[in-house]
Image 1 (cartoon, rainbow over the protein chains, first blue to last red):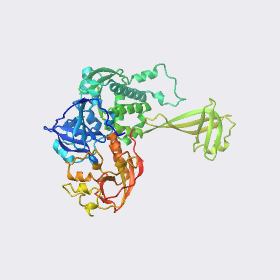
Image 2: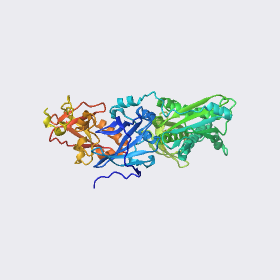
Image 3: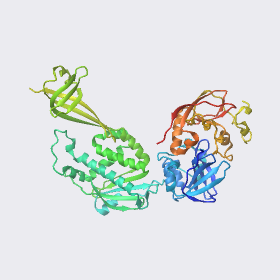
Image 4: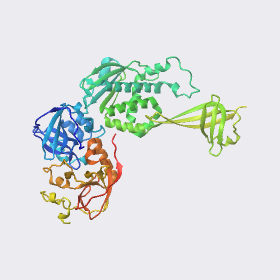
Length: 433
Length: 144
């Protein structure tokens, strides 16, 4: 059975009279795949090949803004964003035969475009695939210096903080798609961004203020009831208001603890640490320098936030200001930056070292490889190597006597991964008389 | 090389420009092409104009129309794989036209002439009559 074109749920149109003239091809391989045309007033139209059968090539034709075309050609937005960001929710589906005749023309809404017609969100312009690129650039006056659609109006966060007489955080979300618009946003996206940032501030609070979590298990004192909750609360924020111009959410910390010996409030210290993480994460060697300030919770929540930015093709501006100190921080993320930072985070391995004291007996001793298997009085099994300092004593150890031992456990975990690898070394071994 | 030995000489003669273009060369090397897993699929052996319906218009630049009668190849497997993956991530249904595999074959000096490869390793090859390349699949591309 011969291949048939997909059924399109659109409105049939008899004629399509856009009076378009071809300017060049953005993608050309064995013929045009994505071309730019212009109308009488030099508005760009994209002819995007989507499918063919034995009779016709099907093209998706849509009007784009010159700024969007500029952003696309200079690599600032993806092909998916170019389609998703069209202002008129109107796409022509034109079937063209080998004689150049158009038939079964339809208009459809963006949301009715079949998934198979859409590019992956990671696909950007590649000048190696283009033909007559110079004509396209010259005709539309495209330039890398043109103000992009992605530069967006920023609020003055210090002014907002002074006006409200409190530390303020602004999460300003923008998208070229219909998912985020003027004063409106899909609940799922808002939820993910708010949750992601909330978990990041909570994890940072624990990293900064929960000194008990940094102690080894046998040195850790019991927690008071609600102690960990109080620490997490230092990172907690509450919604104050939202503003339009894409979508902007203003939050404030619910607790601002002031340390007599530190000029920064707890909430400013938390946000300062977060912005240090943002800045360092753009470069893998800078990230490695601050890894002792980063805990697993911070990495996991940061990973989730970046993945949401990447998958939804968002731009996120994060701002913080303290009206009393006058300090403010800000950072902007788009999907391209998110992809780059995610790569740096994935390469980060967190090493944690714990000392564990135990009592028990050897179940196996290997003098050739200097390794052991040890069972504690709590029936816990440790398998590892003797340290250089004590490995000579292996010839004095046996499987009958009991010993007081100390293990050094090095846990290595890659950012974003759930499983860690453990390396056990026995650093002390004393026979119990 | 005499023009009447080219496979698509009847179409070449109808063009305004000289086709194949001048300065093309005979080559002898291993080359790579986008093919279907079914090695008997006709598109594996056809230039763009012979695959119906063609995307190339006769109103296009004569050089592009001329290359519409040539086979597209890449110099290395890596170049071909990178390009096919890019194309299929952008246009998943191009697999129905180009195939989703990389096929390897060898070109000899008796098979035709090639233009200079571009920076991405792509070049056009004008076959002589009775030439039909045999391909070996070296890679299948799957897009999630």
